[in-house]
Structure formats: C-alpha cells, structure tokens
Image (cartoon, rainbow, N blue to C red; front, side, top):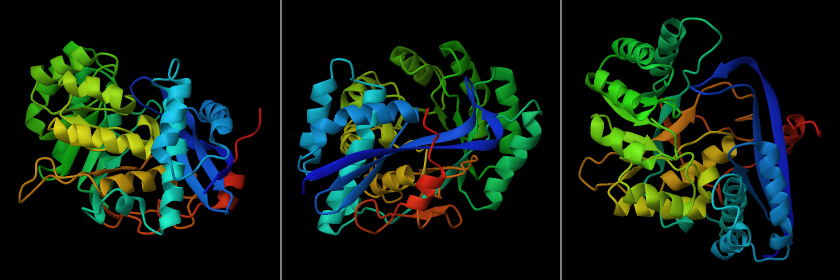
Length: 378
C-alpha cells in the first residue's frame, strides 16, 4: 500500500466565551488533522497536538519523505522522519506533527487488515473505559467558587465517576476551591488537580500538604516540564500522587522522567508524544517502572478515538483481583467541532465510553465539517 498523498486540514472556530488556565487563555479552538491517502484509495486520519498552522507546515515538510512509501511500515517511517529531522526535532512541534502522521498510518494499517488498532496492538484488555470530566476553566472575572462548584456538580449529575479541577492560580485560592468542590461532591467522587505547571516547587508542596485530606487522585503538572528534579522533589515532599506528561515527547523524553522517579502517573498525549507507535512504547516503559499510565486527551474526536484504542490495551499496573483501571480524559470545555468532525460522535453514557470497534481508529471523518470549520488562509 503505497502513499499517494499527504494533506493537512487546519480547523478553527471561535468560542462563545474565552476561558483561561494557569498561564494562558483562549477565545478560539483550533486543530490540525492529517489525512494520508494510499494508491488504492485507503485513507487514514491523525491529529496533531498544539499550534495547528505550525503543525501543518511541518507535516508539509514530511510529505516528500512519505510519498511512494509503504503505508504499512509504521515503525520504519517513524524512524525515517525522526532521523531526518532529529538534530532540531527531538521534541516539540516536530514530534507533534510526527504524531499526526503516525496515527494516520495506524488507521490505514487497521483498515488494510479489517481490524481496530487495539487488536493490532494485541488487545483488547477492555472494551469500555470509565471517563473523567475535564473542564473548570476560568471565565471572566466572576468568583470561581460559585460557577466552578456548580460545574463540577453538573458532571456528577451526568454520571462521571471523577472530575479534574484546574488550579495553579495561587495556593490559598486553589486550596479554598478544592475544599469547596470536595464538600459539594462528597467523599466518593474522584477529584484530580491540574496546575498546568503554575507553581514552583515550594508552592506545589504547600498545596499538596494543605489539601492532603481531600482525597485527591493526583496532582498534575505541578511545576514546569523542564524541571524533572522539581517534579521528584514535589513527589517526595507531599502525599498526593504526582502526574505529568502532556508536554514530554518520545521514548527518550519519558526515559528521563522514569529514571528520575519524577511521577507516579504518566500522561503522554498520543497526538504529541510521537503517535500510537511511541505512546505504546512509553506505556510499556511505564509498566516496567511501576508507573500508572493515563493518557492526556485534548482536541477533536480523532484524538479521542486514538486514545481509546490505546486505553483498550493498557495492562493493569500492578495486576490484582481489583485493579485500578485506566481512565479516559473527556474534555467538557466548549469545542464547536470536537464531535462535528466525526460522522458518529463518541459520547459517554453515565461516564462510560465504549472503544470503537471499526477498522483502524474505528471512526469516519465528516468532510463537510472539515470544510465548514476550515481556517481562513492567511
């Protein structure tokens, strides 16, 4: 199956209301989808994490090295592109662009063999996954103690077993919000924290100690991703499990994370870490180090379907009669085309999401939606 064409689709849509996290804000949602077509008409789809137009430019640079190649040779093509660009591309945008290409090649492989990706990866271990709700972004200047508590209660009413709370705005303010949410949710619903690297080491440790009695599942991205020693210090200095990974790249990046004993929970984003090929390597490495793996998910239904394929094959770590099952991150923030790009949206039912069973990623992309949300050409 020879590759005949490589295209990108840069999508964009304004939000009805801007929202913010610890260090940034946005008034628009964007995405870069990768489409790879084979000579026999088979098409695969992937998604790149991060700035859409920049990802598209790098995929365009990859294109000459992909045309005419065997689309089934996922690992060989991954290494061809990585080796070609590795001097300036060991992390960041080169790898996020490569992720979209790799995911599309796995989609093609599944369609060629008439099987979902999770079967080609040796699964499934599970056919459905419990999802946790991600949201709670800051909106305007209103007091977050009001609208965020109501938001998390809405997720509880929808049946989600857990919710992730955005923090990183200051230890005192965050601690008050965490306690208010825990009090409103009660003791049984899972509650995780995501600082989006908004703290320094001392603040992260202080926050973890302050809310240690609130039954927190994990403290995500407590400090900047470059500071692995800081991660390890936070992990040692307070009792909440430390998580991170959406801004780390490839097996080599995670090798350093695991060797530093920096996290309890690894969160590679498949659309960023290097695609399905690399995410599976990272997950296997995490298991070898005794680290749980809970992929980060952000973007469209293409990325969501990709995460479900990997989640289907993640081993229990550690294995036991009542193991901790991996969770699916289910973004609930406003996204005009998250589900619109799929002919059949991926939804939850009482906080449970089924793994797509169709060939490849198990999805069909809606080309009318791609046209409707296409970003204006500069």
